[in-house]
Structures are given as structure tokens and as C-alpha cells.
Image 1: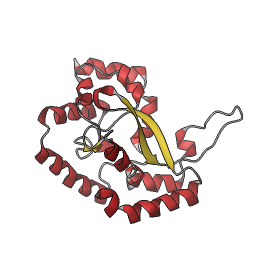
Image 2 (image 1 turned 60 degrees about the vertical axis):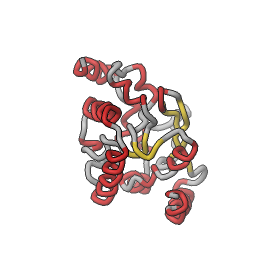
Image 3 (image 1 turned 135 degrees about the vertical axis):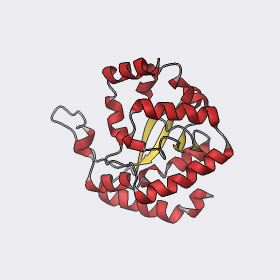
Image 4 (image 1 turned 90 degrees about the vertical axis):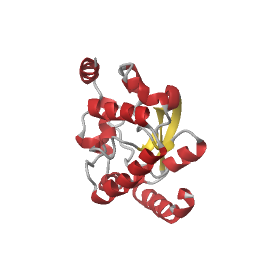
Length: 195
């Protein structure tokens, strides 16, 4: 239903991505889902292809465009994840799927975030989003797993609309750009603080 209702916006954004960044318009990235099973998460592209002299991709902050910043700040780049929901890889509400590299750094307690399907939005996203530390995000993810209910899902969905309209707790580029740089030092502090 959401795909049908939002199809005009979906098509408009797709055309904008094609105009500003070229083809392909989608970006696929492997993320761990329920039970840590890997799936390909779909997003609209927000970065251009740019390489150094050795042929290696430039850092994310040098590849993201002003258009990409705007796309991420409105969270419209997340819209194609409705396709992931339709496929059964994701849910509307649930812990946000992080980089698969995170798996080796989670504590057993933090791994509980994978007991449910990942979501397009979640408790952490309506409780501060990028203003939260990784430890706080993961703790909220586990809290969601432990208190999951249909009423909580509706509450999170309504709060998500507010966050999107006010851009509360949103930094551009999205903190997920920095997720790949989740260092061993940071992960060690997560483990220590969670024990």
C-alpha cells in the first residue's frame, strides 16, 4: 500500500537521482537481518562514482554531492527499502540494519537486536538518532526487542513522521557513512561499557 501511495514521490526521486548522479539509481549494500542473515538493502544513490589515481574509490565525504546531502537529510534515500519490506527482508519498524562488519564487535547482549527483522525506522531513530552514541543506539534496539508490541510500532511510526518533518537528530551525511569506520577502539569501548 505504501509503495502504491508513495509511487509518485518514488518516481520523482528516481528521476532526480538519474539526472544528478546518472545510472544506476539504486545502491545495494549487504546488511545483516533477522538471525544475522545477510540480505541486500536497497537505497537511492546519494554518492557519485569517483576514484583516486590508483583506481580506489574516494572517501564517502568526497563522493557525496549537495543533492546527496539533501536526499539523506530528508531520508528519501531510504524509500526503496519498502521493496525490502515487500520481499520479507525487513519490517517497517525494527532495529536499523547496520554494516555487517559490526557483527564481530557486538556483545551477546547487543546481538539480541537480530532476534527480529530490521526496520526502516526504529526506537533509536525516534529517540535522538545521530545524537546518540552507538552504545545508546544498540541498547534501545535491544529494548525494542524486549518490549515489542503493535502499539509500540504505531507509536514509533507516528514519531518517525515528526522526526522527518522537523529533521530532529539528523546530521548530513547520515551517520551510516561513518559506520564503515567503526574502529576496533570504538567497538572495544562498546563491549566494555556493556558488561
